Structure formats: C-alpha cells, structure tokens
Amino acid sequence: MQTFRRVVLPLAKAGLVTGFALSFAHTLGEFGVVLMVGGNIPGVTRTISIDIYDRVQAAQYSAANTTAFVLLIMSFVVLSIVYGLNRRPWAVGPWK
Image (tube, rainbow, N blue to C red; front, side):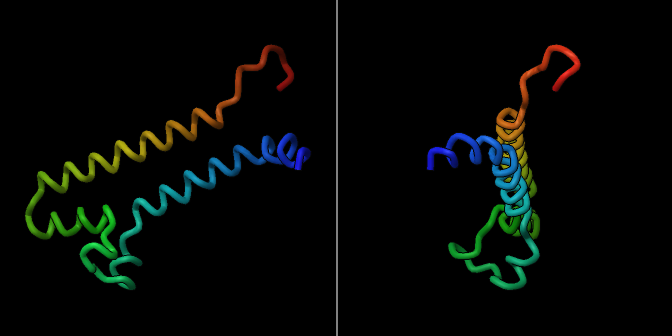
C-alpha cells in the first residue's frame, strides 16, 4: 500500500485528472442519448442541455442564454482546475 501511495498514485495523477475532466465535459454536453433513451421526464432525466433545449423551444431565449452561460463558466472552471493540477513547474536547463 505504501508503494502504491508513493509511486503509482503520483505517476497516475495526470491521467486520472484528465480522465475525470474528459468524462465531465462529455457528460455536460450529453443531449441526444438522454433525450432518446430516457425521454424528458421532469425531475428524473433533466440535464442542463435538455433544460436549454426546452427553454429555446418555449422561446425563453434569455433564460436559455443564462443557463448556457452558467454551463460555460462551469466548464471553464473545471478545465482551469485540470490545467492547474496537470501543470508542471518550469525546469531550468536542457533536461526536463
């Protein structure tokens, strides 16, 4: 367990963080499968992308824009965190 904690986890950190970010980004934009398979059941299969779709269909463009902006900010924050966690310190010299 000590080897796993000291060797394997630090080496796998970048891959785990990147995998989380890609899964999160894919899930945020999921629209078609949820709508086709799960339908649009209020309170059960409600996702942000379906909410935006419903608001556009109801001609509530301001609310749809606000929801899309919140989704954009959430994505930006998550990607900024991932970038910060995966960033490597500057190396001095030709070796890296």
